[in-house]
Length: 215
Length: 395
Image (cartoon, rainbow over all chains, first blue to last red; front, top):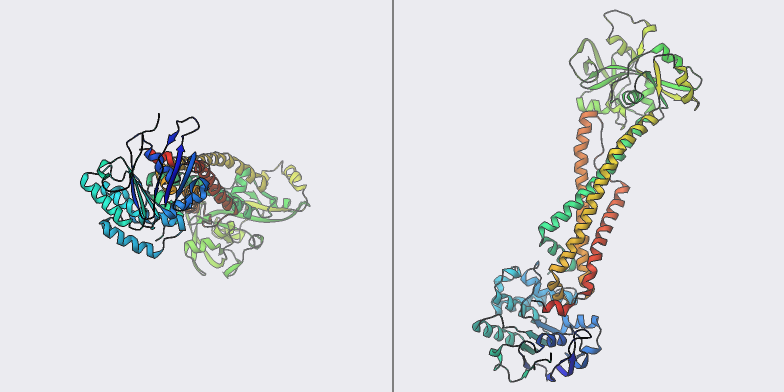
């Protein structure tokens, strides 16, 4: 489902070349990409999401060859097949929490079908934030925001879920809870967690450690 | 769930109430002022032109020609004085003059002028009777539609006239006027006049049983229609040795509106300035939106939004502002028109039509919305070049 071979990337034409290890992840599998700061974690995540284009190598995610795809194809692909949980939960501040959760559907398909709303209700219930559905994002606590952003990433049942440091802003208790939720809700998806959080190290059998990039 | 771009745009605007209100207010005031000026200009010109209607020359006592026109064509100024009827008749017989309508007045009832004239005056403006008949005998009057409506008078009602043209301080209690007819509204000056035979005016100032010598009968003015264009040049020469003058309504009104024109062009410049400021404010608010909301915009790109989606959203926000501001401006100009209409009505007994929509206003709407869209389209272009990866990496 995710396959990276010989990925190299540089920012601009003069930046240092960044080198990433090979890895692959089968459908429904979970894996950890572990690395400290300076290892290019965020760069790799953006490469995997098609926000950056690798200079060299093969990158296949959810059945798409990212180097061979157009920007327009990638926009649609991200909306349909990808769920992304960011380190800091961003929302459209003028919309309510439930409107934010429905936004990927709106942007990808141009409307929000009723079955998505039904799934959203059930998901908010499981995550314990039903009472926040009509609230504005900034009114939520950090933990609630993180749960809401997980709900948004998973509501459209994506094939692959990328999580960028989903726990780094949370204490032990909350970090555990968020990871439990993430795994539970992403049952049928491939889950790739990019983190420096050593607490997560023993959670998954499959763990790739990123090396420090040459300066 | 309603979550289209239009909905998102309106939610984004409402999330910044102060910025939105400022842009709206600026555009509304700009559009409102321009539209108000278009409306008043059109209405004033219409009213002036409707009343000139084929009156080529006005004959009256020497004095300010503009005053002669304002007093005798529009009935909004005091007359320049009286002239002898016999003298006026001589001018009427001049070969270059086709016809003339005499006017004699000096009294009022509740601020409405009582004008002695002939039936040709009503015919000239094409006014028809609503009820009753036109005046025949002395002290019979036919009311203009506005007079009848405002004073709530009907057929058979009687009243005394008051000396002067404006108030009720000096009432002639010995002579009673009787209403014998009421005219249909025409939008012309006739609507606000009380019409009566010339004899009424002469007799009201005569003492008991005194017969006015026909040789000393005076009139206030005569509205003339020329037979030959040379009348405009010839008649003033004929009058040189008399106490009379002729004035040309078209020229005097033109001169007056040109003097108003200086004022309106200053107002127009101010309105344009306000509109320009409002477009600048739309420009800045879209630009500011892109900066303040770049995380949101980048986020939308990771959830299936294309660059075109973001562009449309920002354009819609500017477009909504322009449309709402313009409509608000048109509403504002109607309110202004209603207030102005009230003032004009109280002071001059003139009716302004408050709720007409001018074709030029359509142009104004198109221009305001068009420039508003352009003012958002230019800054919105930078959303097309938004670097998603970099924006998302920013803390």
